[in-house]
Length: 352
DNA sequence: AAACCGGGGAC
DNA sequence: GTCCCAGGTTT
Image 1 (tube, rainbow, N blue to C red):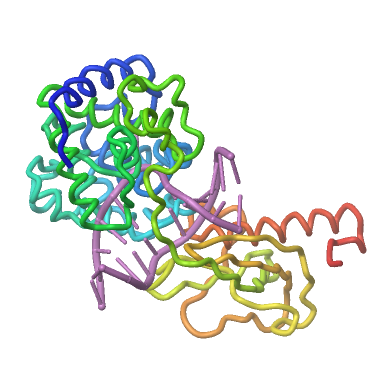
Image 2 (cartoon, chains in turn brown, orange, purple):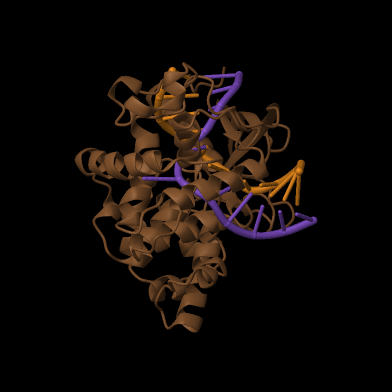
């Protein structure tokens, strides 16, 4: 797409001014430590700011620098990542920390190819680190930037088209200024997150409403075109909260490599698998394009349903130190709530 | 180019 | 219910 010099000047003038006055006070904005920014960028991949806020401080408190992260057991890193999703990010981050220590003397490199060589660092994350942490005039393109550029220049392409994305990268490269490129890039994202939102954008209070192409042509709601997605499918599952004599819970480790690789989970099972099991309740959980309808059963005593592979007993109060999935955390919560009900009103355990 | 990889908030 | 979020890697 051709971007006229007037639009470049306009965006470079208006956006940073708006950003300085309206930006959120986020924890990674107060630091000048490139490692801390790197951690935040990995956590923020496909993940909302509000979600990352629950993890960022705890992670940096436990792994304050690249050396601590490089030296940590990967299961400790995964435990702090538990619930954040896309667990390969945590494995890559820890692996990359080791590369930074060995190859770069413990200092995050500024060179783009050096950054792209780190596992988990792609074109976006390299641009974010270079512009925000190092003040280098490098472009970024994420979902926010794609949307605000599409709307401002009144374009209807979809993110799903790789050729389109490449053209938007070139647009982002033309727009980013030499002076304070990090503020400009963050202004683009903050604008997309707070004003030019996917649904119901706040055009009336938008800093660039005077020159927005989509607003002028009344096409904000249809712009950009939605990305293509696989259809959702429903899956029914049963989870078993199986306790030993000490009240510890049986967990099984998922095989490395695949979905949720290496994470610990409740075993699959119902009353058929564990005689005497009691139904505790149910919940819904979505992973990627699958919606799970999960029933939770509670059992203790007898033969534990260990199955093949690695398994262990974990006390409830120690679950915080284990890399468990959100579905497992929900299932254990359902079982605990049912147990509480049974103690209060024996015979009414929510089994119905 | 397409598939795969979590989870949750907003609507 | 749907959409999408400070994306990256693998095939």
